[in-house]
Image (cartoon, rainbow, N blue to C red; front, top):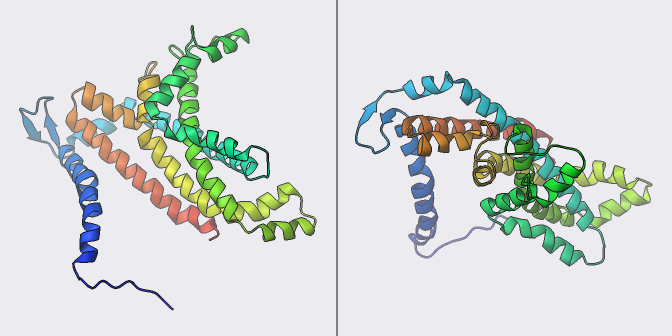
Length: 293
């Protein structure tokens, strides 16, 4: 039997929805519409002159090799952070789900990084991997590796990937651990009685039952890498060296805030939004088919 909620006053449900609708319209829909409109304009940094140019900003943007380079950088960065953060969080969640001594302390320490702001996390990793003063950098140099993320683009990419992964692991860990604890223990015990090894139980029972959580985290992590990683890149490398860590979201900031190309940066943000929506739609269209609810 389906349960429904009834309100004595007809206006009450609308009043309850009004604050959330207002926040969504003001902080999501209005900036989106404004960005789309601004992408068809050419205006100076002070807003004193404006010219409507239709798709000129898009055609100019798509003709720049630097933009495609930023796309490639974003692809590498997104794949690395998503793969590392999800796999590491799943491993930690599986270990934390066991009956171990001090499990509460262990879980609490794994959750702490999520409370750290992205810029602060980036500064912490920068201090550890700073070529001349960093503790970890000194150890790397002692191994004979000329570590220098300030000059080497590959080293800089490794640094931002590690910082972004460390920041996101705690979020993924929370959901993976909750998903593991919701799996009926009787199912796993039955498989154990039938002689299934621990590895076989994980891949044939645990992971399929955990697939809805994994699918949700896949979508969230891609959004995180494309949008929320801005603070880490800005505080760690500033997009350098030689634009080696310049992702799409950071290029929007560089061209708009620092370069003064407001129309071009708005066009970039619209393309980034389209890419993000398309990736999410593809995930729900093809990957969700393999999810077992």
